[in-house]
Structures are given as C-alpha cells and as structure tokens.
Amino acid sequence: MKKDWQARLEAISEMDRGLWAEGVTFAGIDEAGRGPLCGPVAAACVIMPPEPLLLYVDDSKQLTEKRREVLYEKIMETAVYARVALAEPEEIDRINILEATKRAMAEAAREAPCKLFLVDAVKSLDVDGEVRGIVHGDALCYSIAAASILAKVTRDRLMLKYDQQYPQYGFARHKGYGTAQHIAALRAYGPCPIHRKSFIGHFVDSE
Image (cartoon, rainbow, N blue to C red; front, side):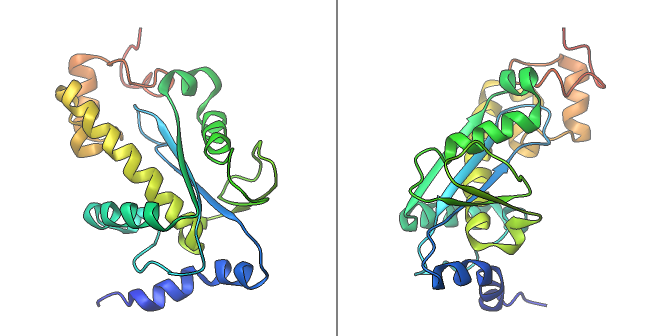
C-alpha cells in the first residue's frame, strides 16, 4: 500500500504544531552513527518554522537515500537554525559513545536561539535551556526527524569520502556498520585510523 505522506506529515508534526500554537521556539536534536564500528557520530540541531511544513520529513531510517538528500537541501534552506557537529572516533574511544554523542549534540545546539530542546531519547544535555528527551522522537516529532535527516546525510557523505581513502572496507555500502562484509574486511586488513578501537575488540586486535 502506498504511504499517505500528507497524513504522515500531519501526524509527525502534531507535537510541533502544539508548541508553535503556544508561541514556543524550540529545536529538535538527533544523531546518526552511534552503532557503527568506525567513523564519527554526527549530531544535528535544527529549528524549523511552522510554515512551510516539508512533505516526506520522517525518521531518516524510513527514507531512501535519494529522498534524504533532497530533504537535506530543503531543510537547510528552510530552517531558522541548523548545525551539525561531530564526535570523532578518538573521542568516542576516550569518553564512550553516549558521552561523545551528548557532547556533539550540545555543540550542535550551542548557538541555537531557543530555550527548549526536544531530543531523541537523550534526557540531559549541557545546553542553555530545557531538554525534553523523547523516546523514538525521530518518528514522533517533525523537528527531531528533520535533525535526523541532517545528521544521517552529513555522516553518510563523510563515509563516502572515507570509502575513497580506504576502499578495502566497503564504507560506501555499509557506512561503517558491522555487516559481514565489514567484519571480514576488518579481519583481513586490520583496522584503519577511523575505526573505533573500543568497538572492534570482538573482531580484531586493534593494537
């Protein structure tokens, strides 16, 4: 059955529209790349205006790559504020994935002109304002979904560049996630500089 995208837009923007009706300025925050074995985590913070609502905005995982790329450009053109920050593999290894993700989220939000931040799942951030953690927020909140698209596209573009630098791992295909192809390449070639040492110990000797 073909998806009713207009109905989906109405559903995912319900929370946002309630806040806009109250005159509240708020940001959505989400990340991409907590699970992969390599590369950075990308965190995005975005303040979207009440109008226009962009059709097809949804949890980035539910969208095709082509649609994410188109929406990325539309979100960047439409947003009142949009910023993406990265936590690199060295930081992830040093302070753990959750803390590195939270630091990237806070950095992305650092200059956002608002005092309310709606965040996918995360309940506390070092930001100047109130943080509301929303479980499955990227599927329930238009602004968080928009942030998820910015984070996902930013990270995927980086992984395509890394694929050119380290072609033996197949980053263009799996974007660093622990697929059978990626694990086989890790075992054959060992880790490269963008692998997270704290993530790959089960597969190879990272020293």
